[in-house]
Image (cartoon, rainbow, N blue to C red):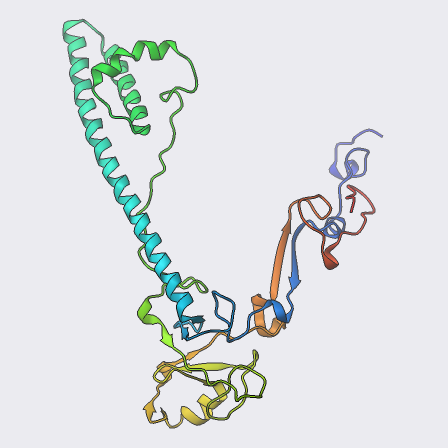
Length: 320
């Protein structure tokens, strides 16, 4: 059967078969999303860096818990990295200043050389301009290679040889774009939220541990109810205590005091809750996605669980 002039006529002809959406989905093309289980999402008392129960916990203004040692080490490493980037940026600025000085010196010598050729050797304006452009191009190539440009005379002596050589690997024949560094941001950021975080923003946390012999990690200091991953917890910044949201609303907020210390609405931080495995509770944290470049069975990705490909009824068949 020959090919027609319309796509609808060509769709089923030999050599023009195309997979349907369901066939491609059955082979696992594209992004596959999967519900994570309860064990795949951290608990409310886990450090966001070490993924272990917090030790000497601190909290960020956004409600993320960290072990004090872990977050301090993270902030310190960020500051060291920022200083290294700043040193590299300052060195680049000094190098650019040196290049600009050499470029201006070569430009001045080039102008004098072109003037001399025009007035003493009878060179035309076009020849003098081409000479200037050749010298400037070679000077830029030498500066890009971090070489010191001695003078325009030295560059001009090699100009004729450069024209005869047609090798593509010559610096003047293969100019490269300069990789310029931007001025680094000296701020430190929260590893979990990505927002700016300073050392003085960290809030000390006092978790009331469960009595010996009982299950759980911490309890409400007022009602003695054990916290779970489904509990809505708030931190009282003046005291560092963690209580249930219901306790705050019904017992502490009406009086405005806790243990004799004034606690206002702005002094309360809601902690990030742990995972339960339910999408309605965990939101995006309970979803995982994986992108298959060529579908399962291609050798580029592993086969796992329910995402193992089914045999296609038409089109391209993947051997699983």
